[in-house]
Length: 451
Image (cartoon, rainbow, N blue to C red; front, side, top):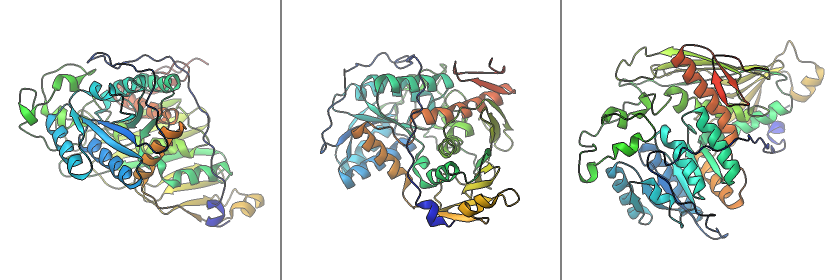
């Protein structure tokens, strides 16, 4: 079988994989409640979807600008407001939109955006510990949500998000844009067609290297909660549900180094590996058992999270996941899924966020029979993959789903499976022991769940 044969196979039907749970809103825990309109604004076929951006640091600024670019190209959306606790970031974004698109409102309090009746959807690009509170409040305020990865900061918050989507029927696209790339869906089809037989193991990595150490972003020495004008930071609000502490510029500007606000490599980077793997598999799955290791081997600064990290996870359906990473070495391993009859190599270069023009099916020559060979061949087969901008595609998919109310590419049920894996890995590393997950209770702990 050649690549063109596989590339013409039928499109996948998105599965109905809903997880019931009762919503326990953590929104407003630090700031109070948001008004709850009964429903969102009616969006006509020619109306632009009006968007607010909550959190305009580096990532929020970039994603907001990409939304604006898409909206300018096809008239699908328009940025209406931006929000951040650091006043300088608000001003910089307002100046950008005024110069390149249209003036936008700028606020320091996210509730001002959620209370606006003319805003249909929000981009949530805050530090991780604010993802769930704001997303839950946004859904209760009848807003659809583009929720940056990681989806949330804990397993309990993942449960709440899944339940809230079911309860409110809002559209939530989790912002791991690489899941919109075609190779995962081509791999999924090949696996469904029987190309690898019984699934055995998935592997992936995420490696970087730098002189200064990962997440050691620039610190503005003039910023702080006691400063005036553009230098003012609302530190109390920024801490929100996290433990209270005195102003710490390193924690504010370099939050991914600290457990209170991030899971480090696991949540920042492994989410981009775990989410695509769940798409490739016959269906998304929660891990049964997770163990993790690593350490701070090179960058011995203020950081709490490791600079080198790895995990091994086992799944009740009978396969494993192995992920490796270091922020002090840039050599990747291929991203692939092994089966008894063959292997699907999704990213030979190993970089899950980087484009590729093909995936590879590699049959297990000693095992396959004549029927397999007649269908798939006995030698390596490259399957072509379309080249598209995955972030643009992810954004357009979200905007389309806001109109149609369909399930987006990275829906919360799929994202929750990835989130549970990486959150369990964080706890395994921090506690120094194996963690088990109970799907019925959404609880992870050191004891296997009862049958």
